[in-house]
Amino acid sequence: MTRPTDTETATARGPAQRMFAADRASRDLGMELLRAGDGSAAVRMTVTAAMVNGHGVAHGGYLFLLADTAFACACNSRGPVTVAAGADVVFAAPAYEGDALLAVAEERTRFGRSGVYDVTVLRDEQVIVEFRGRSRALGDRGVPGRKETP
Image (cartoon, rainbow, N blue to C red; front, side, top):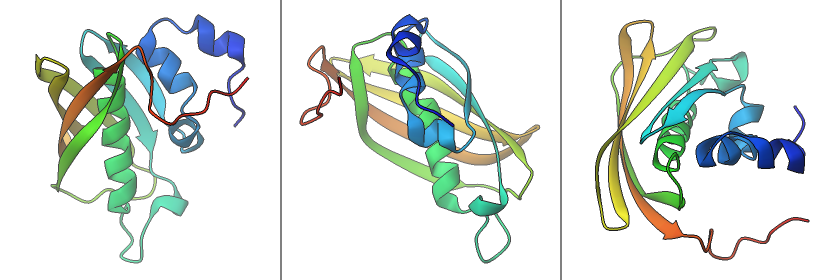
């Protein structure tokens, strides 16, 4: 996959879409942002052979990453730049190579610059992961220490 051009990133519909367009880590894993807005988001990913661990199931790190990406899209859907302050995950069922997973993120509450979001990762109707993320809005300053690319 290629990085989006500046024009593609600048013309994406909203802050979450622009963030996702620049998120090479998620896009290179085949993730697709289905929707984002008003504190919610949905992201889809198919488990590949490269994501399976020595037990023949999807590695928990990839499942966490999928949930974290949906969380990031939800908490950035209104702007300003928002990052994770922490997260907890429960692995409820295994996922396997070829499984199409859907991560659905919903805002539970925002207070000051903080927020709480729940993400459920599903295979069809079966819950694979429950994730709770805590966010912190940085404001218009962006991510501290990040070097902007021309």
